[in-house]
Image (cartoon, rainbow, N blue to C red):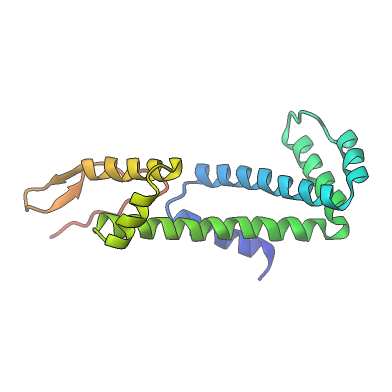
Amino acid sequence: MDYNTELENAKQKLLQLGFTEEKYNQLLELAAEELIDRALIDLQEKDLPLLEELEKNLVAEPTNIEEANKNIELIFVSAYGEQAELKRQEMLMEYLNTTIQQTITTKDLIERYQAGDPTAIATIESSKDHPDVQEVLKLVEEQSNNNVTNSGGETENSNVTPEPFPQPVPTQNY
């Protein structure tokens, strides 16, 4: 499968998992920062004098996308030579695939937690002091506070599920 197809498939999977276009674009920005950091670390470990030379050629404060892309290209070419583009693509796909797996795992944990699964509850309880877990628990609590009972005695959610979790499509009974 070619890179563009892989990238589009990863994007579609993230959108299916509840990411919006805006969140996907923010994810790409985070990925770019991560990839640059990794390339700079690789370069530092490989050739410190080359890293110092690279610093002289970079645009210190990029003011537009062209300057930022030029910096990225310089960093990757310096770190990986002829394999720069391939390495960048591999690193981006690894980042996106890791994000997909983490999102699936997190959503599964939340669903099991909401269903009262003792293992999920124990996992979350043991991690409650972690800021990321606190944020997820806040979202779960907000969602459970939005539940109402309809005229048929069934529980429904009165609000949209917070991103990045998809909202189920309500069905109508005829």
